[in-house]
Image 1 (tube, rainbow, N blue to C red):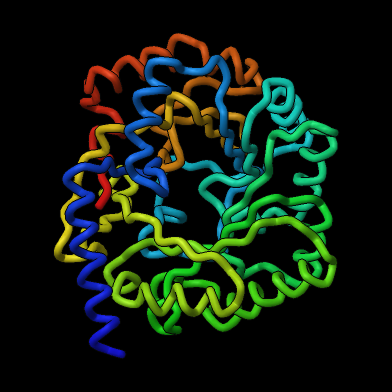
Image 2: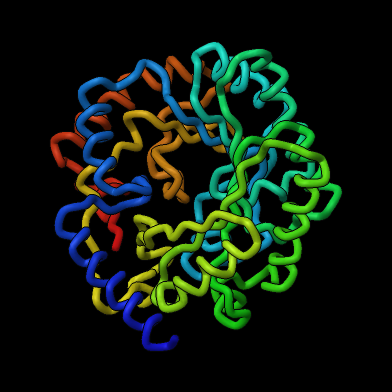
Length: 333
């Protein structure tokens, strides 16, 4: 069994090295990496007049301090909570413009917002009979009580992803530095039971893990662990969070892979990111607000998205003229 697992890990690493030669890297990389090329060539030539996916930070903060995450280490991030009027404004404009996914989280754990289920209800209410936008959150699950589980399911949440980095307690606890492994597993198992008890179709449940070298070494065990609990599992690539001065993840990557510049990033062409104070920033790794395109309290999302600052940045990305920007140092494995 040990030899079989070792062979699978070795095969996975060989495939990963091969992918590196042909596939893009970076924080926007698709689950099927080749699709990033397709997305890049499509959205850079046919950039929509309104973002297709919007992530919204409803409240700053997280109950974890993952070793590869800048949370709590950044200097220029501002702390606070989005007021209801601002959130409603975002939802109404997103629904009116047929946004595909509206995710009420960004650079935080969504469950630090104790009214997260009310945020979900608000999106569903404004959406009415429309299919979009879908609602999705990613959480470490440490704050997920039975009551919160029921509230989120009954609110109509459609996708929930749990960030669980490892299935060995010591590895998990060392990476997460906050919620404890046994607590998170219990919370996820209970969430599955509550969903079954309510007879709910949604949300779709997945577990994601960032592929550090420790996690890659137990990848097959993680797949089996979550499969036995009826939960889908996905490994997500490690990136450098664009600013190694905040968090240097180079020591966390497998020794047989190398960092690679994200040549085909599609983020500014189809996705928007809004902080709790209304700032529309460059992307999910812009922890220090290096590029703020505008504030939705002063303008609409559409006006900012189609404004000259955004257009100018998109031109720079296509021209590979990124000196002095956050994107200059964005890499993945």
